[in-house]
Image: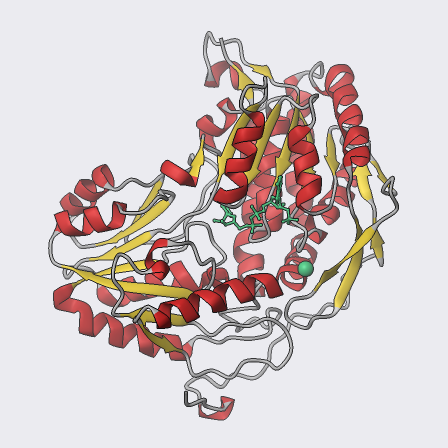
Length: 486
Ligand code: NAP
Ligand code: MG
């Protein structure tokens, strides 16, 4: 394939990297248990790497069952003696304070998020960190109003909750999990993903500074085994998991037959549907945002595009043109659109899918950008000549790879869009409100965006149909999932 050098590309902006001078990272991070940073019982650590440079950022404790035991004891004691007996209004003040402190330290969090995870600074600065603060603000407001949210239901906390999160929105997922748990009077043990633990550990420092009572939030780092130790722990009352469908199924089996409650936010294979009456330029921007945003590391990524046949040529031409202008590279550069792939393993998964796509007969087109020589990178990619049975149209790739198909009628596109084991999200682009309502009633997806994409709000419940999950997070539905209701 022909590659262009940077000077030939349509955008040739001077580098505008965010400074990292003021970022303070320790060489080594311990677990956060009972309000203190404590060494892992087995004394083991692992490295967290900057995926854009392959430079080691810090060492992080590897959690074992012994560490989880300690955290559960701390969380249980904090639950019984402090948090569940504290007046709700006082709980609200702590949650509100955490929200304010995230805002105050927003820049530091945004830079660390981009360093550790590879996402463009524009996204961590404008999306991840503000939304993380919003989750705390929103839930601070509910803490003393649960009686009104659930009238005559005598809302009571569950106890100690275990929360396990993925690497695509590290601080946002942590906030999304911790804020509702605290607002409802529960205490927490959170495990961030192995490749992106740093903002959760920074949040632990912030929580320490906030004066939140010891043991209310505990953060244990580690890999899948650490997560499994949390899931298996008999003293935990609820598991809240966000991650792959594969691990979600294991967790669901493990907790079946126990007293544990569970919510699962899992994978997706969203359909983005564009009708001939749509505002095409706006739709193309939305499609690009839907799949190339955060390198496609988004559970809701609009990874399947359905284009009405009459506008197929136009849409593909515009998409290819737009692909060429996407700036791929340094996540810390404020102009960057597409950052680094989160890990070597994920890059391999994506590249394997691209290979399968080609082998199965789909036609690949990639941006002609030049990729940095070090780090994990993938060119924004689209596939034409895709059919429903193609692997790239069926399985979650979790990378910047779009599979494009066409349709003629509404009935056809609904049946194609629903023909997947997943059902997390979908997008519809049309000028007609009636079409939007028709589709939102028939598409099997937890979230459906119309003439926009990837918009999130703490007040809005979020979750999947079919193999995309169990239960809802966010809004009143999300609060209910952390309560015993009569
Ligand atoms: P993953 O492999 O399932 O991991 C998610 C978390 O679970 C990580 O913290 C992981 O630790 C841990 N884990 C792994 N094996 C475990 C086990 N047996 N028991 C308990 N915990 C275990 O998912 P991922 O690759 O990090 O994230 C990508 C997936 O998340 C995609 O499928 C995506 O669609 C989904 N996702 C869904 C949503 C949603 O809201 N529905 C949001 C974001 C992402 P390690 O880090 O050590 O593996
Ligand atoms: Mg990392």
